[in-house]
Length: 261
View 1: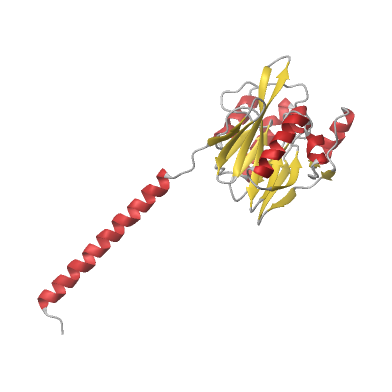
View 2: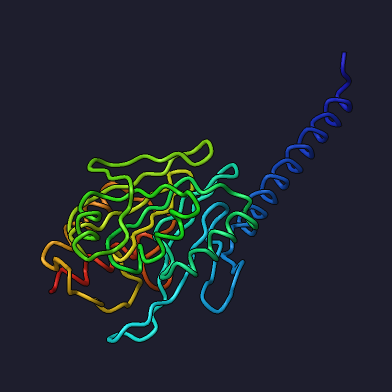
């Protein structure tokens, strides 16, 4: 039988333990918030920059000299998992693509399962030959292959008409066509494990201009991005074809930009 003093003592011990547990829980929560991933540049050369934007996602940036917009930085995305990777959009030349392939193999130690050009412009597939020469299979929407053929570009090898699922390690990434916008063929890539969308040139960075509209369907652009927003309402990160990555606000900005065309 416990004496009254023992009961009080035991209650004090239990209360103290509960307080310590609560403090530990708060400390872990604060620590996790502090340790939220901070994007960092992990590679830079004259022609290529790689920025790690989450644990397993990397934005690659190469440059395209244009008549109307000067030397334009062009984004692509690498998604990795278990020593495998998938690349969205090639760098803007075969030489820079070779550089990126070498970096993925030697630094990330990943086998590249696929290269996916998200539309037919040369900021998406100008380096396709380098990927083919490194035995990387290419996948593109059927309209992208048709338009690349019309323009005498190197052709992606594998075509798809329905949404495409590609495996990377023990995860999947999805590629889907939502409608016309920047071009007739623009698709987007999505990594569920990272909750990252590669929007390509269909999605604009915040405060961007409308950019090149030579192959665009301006009247349909907002509707297409609206369908993407409906499919992925809570995106953690969105990478546009040019400029800074962000979150779902990039979709909202793009919708607004082209609603008042």
